[in-house]
Image (cartoon, rainbow, N blue to C red):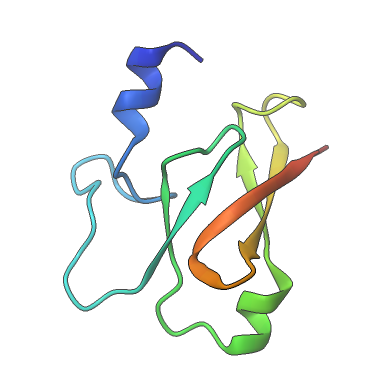
Length: 90
């Protein structure tokens, strides 16, 4: 991904409508750090502690496995507002 694509993604919400890409008041977000979704925000509003602790497997076309692949992210110990990339899976 080139720097223009990276800048376009920063501050956007993963899975959000392109017409309303930014954060909304009253919602809780985690920043995705590293990997193909670096800089995107993940809306974790209403998630239970167990769901957050488990991390996520997010669909992405930008990862190692292309369309249909997934990027794996886990909350950063001591900083649950930032989730670190752990790799890609098919």
